[in-house]
Image (cartoon, rainbow, N blue to C red; front, side):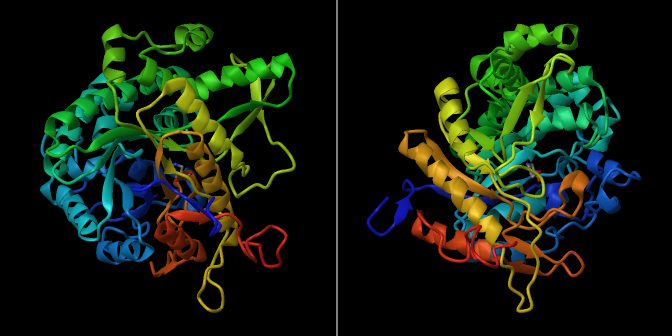
Length: 465
Ligand code: IFM
């Protein structure tokens, strides 16, 4: 910390926000876009809160210039967005849809005009329905199609995109989509979920090769994983062992093949026949070196041993004493522990916090201001922990807030607001929240104030939101 009370981040630090296509774009069937599994799923009765769909979402597709203006206003130097695969290939493969690609072309140009680095995610949950009809991610061929899609996009945008992310949260795609069924395509089959994990990782490797062969400037390539540090509920040996077992499923299942070229042996043994048989050549493809690891962090898990719980004999608990958001426990220290652990165990070339944020029930006050103090507190506390990791030599190159805009939070519909910018879902009107102005100041300073003034502390009157 400096004498002026600011914790300065490294020169060139990436400050930005993240979004995904289905959560903000809308225009679900315009300009030749094909149907995605989320279009199908959200149109089914009972799959999302209040039957919400992404048909219109935040209407970003039609409000691109307004949203670019907001990004510039916030002073972002990086913007992470995803490309809708069915917008580019309405059938997932074969004929390209030029109008779909043109939208992203305009977006990338608009970002660069505003001095914002484009970070492209190729897959953020919205598989073309046509490929699901061929078995979806359970079908190995889909991994190949993903490589072809990556090729096409890199061919078009590879002269301007600075950062590529192949997949967002493959664990969520596999386990919420194919095991619990809370996400599209709503399947509940553990064998499928593990097969899907492998195919997603394989397709990541294909995409890395495809982008490297097509890009015409040295863009950096990575993947974004949802990772959670796992802590034992007590110091008992049983709880410690349970935490390690859950860690193998939650974190090492994706980290080990990507960085060590092998799935965790203990996990494979535990899962026995449930685990797919994997050709050794696949692991070479999966572990193709990448330029950065994206980490999405929201919360931790605290696990206690439970001999009755199948296979893993461990269950998550809800520790008391800490604050909770609408979705999770708030545990800033977890991001420090996670960054330090990933760095010391896997040594990725560089790390970017590709998502961090919090859902709080905020809204417009009488004067049209959104005083989302709890979000400011959350972001500030987490950034302090990121800063601490950087001081300890963990190579963190950027921090992106989830999310730019309030948006469609998957099965939870529009009930969870994560944005730095408030969206009135009736009128689609945007309003920068107090957290957005706070973040703007952090970016402008390239530094964080150590202590937040009134009324950002839990004890202060009016902290409510
Ligand atoms: O909204 C999601 C995003 O799509 C993926 N990461 C977690 C966010 C909050 O749940």
